[in-house]
Amino acid sequence: MQDLTVAFEEKNLKKEMDKLAEELKKDVSIPGFRKGKAPVNMIKARFSQQLRAESLQKLIQDKMIDIIKEYEPFIYGPPVIKNLDEKDKEIRLEISLDVPPKIDLDLSAVQINDKNDNEIDVSEELEKLREINSELKSVERGIKKGDVVFINIESGEEAISNYSWEVGDDDFSKNLIGLKTDEKKQIEVDLPEQFPIKGFTHEKKIINVNIVEIKEKTKPLLDDEFAKDLGFSSLDELKENLRKNIEEEIKKNKKDDLKNEIMKKVLDMAGNFEASPTLVKLGSASGLNKDEAENSAKQATLLDAIALKEKMTVAESELDEWMEKIAESDEEEFEEFGDEAIRFVKQSILRAKTLDFLLNRAKKEDSNA
Image (cartoon, rainbow, N blue to C red; front, side, top):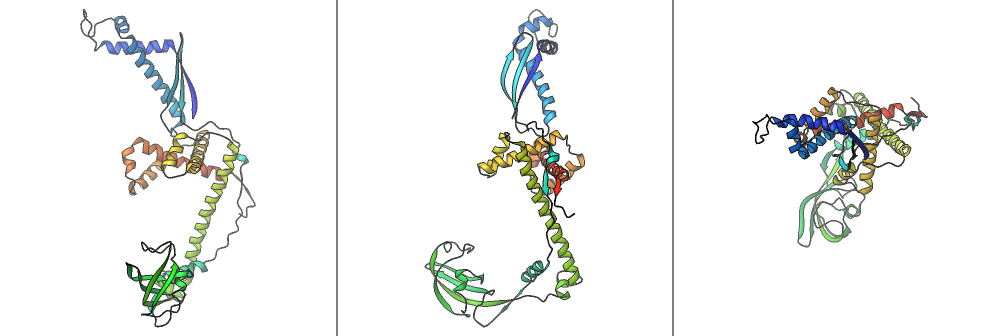
């Protein structure tokens, strides 16, 4: 919040009153004068309170437009008039405005650890692909870990038929090991949290299971044919594609980590400042707890303050690109907000640009680049 004092000279107020009186004269009828012909002094005398109030409001609005331009697009809430002091030659107005604070930080002093120690291993991703593309084949043997079994389950009046379950390391799975097709068993066990059957979860129950079918997972061979099935010409091409994807993911995660590191350091440098009350409320309304809402609002408020200090702007092309993305999404509410939606988008763009600015400006330690 910024507390501002706005001052007007009484002579400027009188000039505005004269202008309004001239405009009012055209539409006012006063006994003894034809419409629009009454003397201005008579208009000013008869409507003095109205003219003064409207003139003061006009001067305040004009001044607020200038102030808002200085902080755009980071106007979080409407201005609040705290006090109006009218003296002989001057009118002073105290206003509270929910905008970013004025800051003076040595951003060049920010240092980050840019060490690149990530090794790229595609074998794990290849195994995930093999797992996803596994075939299930029915087998006539006892259940083993890794099998997918189809079972009928009963517990009192509750029942489910032909339920599929991948046998793992949980207690429920351990009770299935060794059972064969058509075999039945009564077990008492704490069911896994992921068990998606209403009434069967998060408590120990005696249940009856009947094995309907046992299927074994068969992973495909890791060869060129496997790669071709996935749309690649060879296994080498698949590996190279995975490597590039992993590199991009590592870069993205690293950039996100560095931005978080920078944000923490800049917050420490800024010391104690008030986050926008409006942004705190918005955070709480979105489901954040008190501390999370306060921290989120502080980060946004500080980024906005830096954006203002560095005189960052949003190009029309940047705004158009974001608005096109929104138009393609399901965020229909933006269309209803009009100017507020555009202000929100500009805030988002500038916060992202400010983080990139801080990242590019920060001194990098232990860099292998």
